[in-house]
Length: 314
Image (cartoon, rainbow, N blue to C red; front, side, top):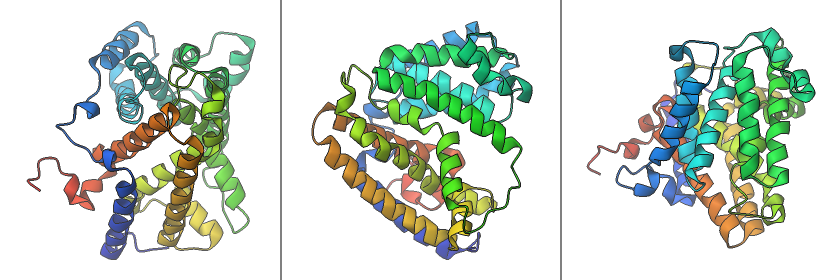
């Protein structure tokens, strides 16, 4: 493993990040850009819905997950209608509640059977999650809409399993499993589907061939842009660390491989989408997703990329 406090690691990481950012110039946060300011309708819808929902917990507990949801929705999906951004924000806040372990495990275990049977959920926040999935359906083609439901089911299933497998050991035969469970618990089909609302791409065929690459890109971007804060914290159970262990590599070597893979996927997705609305939506999503990591304080990227400081004179 690499030295988690190594200045050399931070310098190498900064170089890698700048290389990615150069491919998406619009990803750099700019306080003067109107295109990077959330539409007020998004916040209005989110606040109205939260005031109506019974989430079964105090506001101070659920506030942070919905702040995360709002930030992701308004940064990554700025190109879709404000109403859709609001639904994405609400959906994201709810799945973060599950991911953070804030709901009773017994209730989460019954989520899928009760969803499929049409029965009320055992926790009010899970009823809200069913509602959120349903509300999103109207904005996407049949394939995208169904991907949101199936992705949500996979997410809950994998979360339940991983609660009982936190200390599982990994070896050089574990890489396929590590990738498999990563794909299942990341809700990646949902967040890829959100890129292409049916008012942008009325036909699934307009984007579907770029769908697999986009799903993988979502994961890799998260792994790369989360790495610095994870390295600082000395985290040892992250996807990248697990994958490096399974492949017998240093973390930075694994990170370099991921960046190479990202470049391949980006080029291929652009080639598949060609020119037009599907491509424009994808480019906006990519710029917004990277911008989200760059402007979110918890990723601490200003420490390795000082040019991100909006109050800087440079």
